[in-house]
Image (cartoon, rainbow, N blue to C red; front, side, top):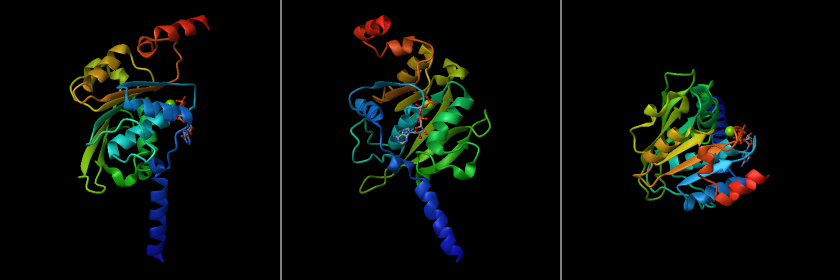
Length: 228
Ligand SMILES: Nc1ncnc2c1ncn2[C@@H]1O[C@H](COP(=O)(O)OP(=O)(O)OP(=O)(O)O)[C@@H](O)[C@H]1O
Ligand SMILES: [Mg+2]
């Protein structure tokens, strides 16, 4: 009986831990993902609660695990990746990208219920900032069919630490959840040059048109927006 209950609990845990397989993008999310096939830099700019963070989390979980769904037409990496996910502050990064990717920050027992499936989390490394905030996650990559298994590494960053903390590592991708200052954005983009990697920016424009946003708009689009 006890084993049976343990088994049921395990099944329930796995089902809850399967958000990645269950992810079905809304139209705007699907467009955002698809654009990754031909663009190194992408911006998902949309109003509140339209699924920006979830879209970023789902795509990051795919690259980290190598588990791309059948319908996927976006960017694909054919090897384990090193990715960053970042927000404005340590708390903001914890409560948005970390929560979506790993699970509720304050409940360690629930880690593995975010977009990165529980069975793919090899290790979690605590940060030294905000309570419950992770420094990084080691993720099992590939291993299906004749693909050799490997390990990806996801690290969490924040803009508040300043550009110096953004130097160094070569990366496959940087996710900016909320708008970064231009110097941080450029530093993140530079980190991905050697791998022909990607940057994604997901946010609601609250501060008007910033220099980062303007990078993504054509002259015609800017003109139209100014007239509106
Ligand atoms: N493709 C989807 N399928 C089902 N639910 C979704 C999907 N995309 C987003 N959601 C749900 O919609 C809600 C808002 O999503 P999310 O937090 O990603 O939005 P956001 O645009 O980042 O919001 P905010 O403006 O607050 O930053 C969440 O509850 C999320 O789980
Ligand atoms: Mg969000």
